[in-house]
Image (spheres, rainbow, N blue to C red):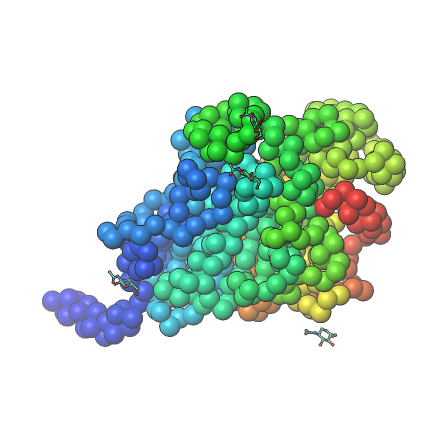
Length: 536
Ligand SMILES: *[C@@H]1O[C@H](CO)[C@@H](O)[C@H](O)[C@H]1NC(C)=O
Ligand SMILES: *[C@@H]1O[C@H](CO)[C@@H](O)[C@H](O)[C@H]1NC(C)=O
Ligand SMILES: *[C@@H]1O[C@H](CO)[C@@H](O)[C@H](O)[C@H]1NC(C)=O
Ligand SMILES: *[C@@H]1O[C@H](CO)[C@@H](O)[C@H](O)[C@H]1NC(C)=O
Ligand SMILES: *[C@@H]1O[C@H](CO)[C@@H](O)[C@H](O)[C@H]1NC(C)=O
Ligand SMILES: *[C@@H]1O[C@H](CO)[C@@H](O)[C@H](O)[C@H]1NC(C)=O
Ligand SMILES: CC(=O)N[C@H]1CO[C@H](CO)[C@@H](O)[C@@H]1O
């Protein structure tokens, strides 16, 4: 009796504040969605449509507003993710109808909370959705339930990046992402979020997307985001619309659509028919298909210049930003059978078709391969190629952005290296591979996985999870990674033109600041010097 009385007194006492909390049933005006409060004090809304299904005439078209629905929709299930290139055409995990987002918010947030918002752009080389369905509760709990998390799918491969230069808009996959950022502006306050405090995050092509939103339309700031945290930014080959015409023509030919009306022919096919032909072909002049063929193009609208040039020119949105990378960013991409210098060079040529033989020769000088006999389980040029590719495509471009930020007046420019070694990844020869830290940032249970065993509670790198979450939560809340950093971790000092230093995340969660060594600086100086000729 006594206990019951105490309980009801407690309920009455807390009722006024409960009444203010965001209702799990959120009215987005075009639809109402019913979220699901979880035991950990967070409510999740899964599978919210942020755009109309991109089907029929909307295939290869920019995203349109979502349709109206009168009955409230139960937001309990994630949407399917987008069709990938080189995928199994019969998989049911993906669908052409894939423009969905998920929101995670503290259940006690109110419409007045104005919580910082973290919008994460997953990677996948613009040809797949590599980490759909990230669970935001791990990072939100690391913030003591004081941030909101949004994750989403966007179109990739031909669905996101096909253009014929006449009747289609280019870069629709990036336009999907922008549609999400506009959605956040319109609706996130209804979940307790602050539309004037939006941090965009992303890994790999997601980080590349961040860089492209920064330079989009020549760097016009639409107020869609206020800080950015980019993990392993990719600077791929960027073609103009006309240079990419061969991709369109090749698909049209293989689909049996050659003729006067290729676009309506392509739109008349089922997605299964397209998926059966959704494969890559070599860049003109290369021997083999690149890892990722479809991608952003210079369309004189969304993209007006090569990203490298836009950053050099200062034509980008100037917000506090983190741009960092993993120690061995190339290992998961370079074929582990690479056993000759010729094979190494050919792989680079296949990804960067504009590279010259002189430039390849210079790269061979800068990346010698003295320890060729230490490779019993792999080709003896695998690690050499991994180093070239990892630095050209990811690490050096990241430093370029760090530097151009500062040169253009943004002092809050932070760099890092994730060097947290996991025994299995080391044994597999991967070193500390591309985007490994994503599993730590969200917590090892919360990504597509499987996360490295050492990141789980009790593992030697479990502490590194708390450490990276501390920095990210700080940055998301204050645009400074140090404000709430965790448990004795190092002060993360900003990048300066003079001090090219970065935060080093080490095994076990140890942290320190490190300066770039002379060899890395020299290699990146050369890589930067050829970036424009490579169309990066
Ligand atoms: C949802 O919001 C819109 C716009 O404010 C309003 O017209 C509509 O009546 C609301 N729906 C419900 C069910 O409250
Ligand atoms: C929500 O709960 C967290 C702790 O979980 C607390 O720090 C925060 O102040 C609460 N927010 C509101 C608006 O009550
Ligand atoms: C996210 O994690 C929480 C805590 O484990 C769980 O309750 C929730 O259902 C998860 N959400 C999804 C979409 O898996
Ligand atoms: C979360 O709470 C812990 C324990 O009170 C505190 O040390 C930490 O700074 C808090 N973090 C944030 C982001 O509020
Ligand atoms: C394509 O258009 C041209 C010019 O309008 C016409 O001469 C030709 O017959 C058309 N070809 C086909 C296959 O319809
Ligand atoms: C950046 O740092 C410089 C040197 O400390 C300072 O003069 C300048 O005001 C800072 N700029 C901003 C935007 O904070
Ligand atoms: C299918 C379609 O709309 N085709 C049009 C593409 O654009 C050219 C040039 O603007 C038109 O002539 C086609 O009719």
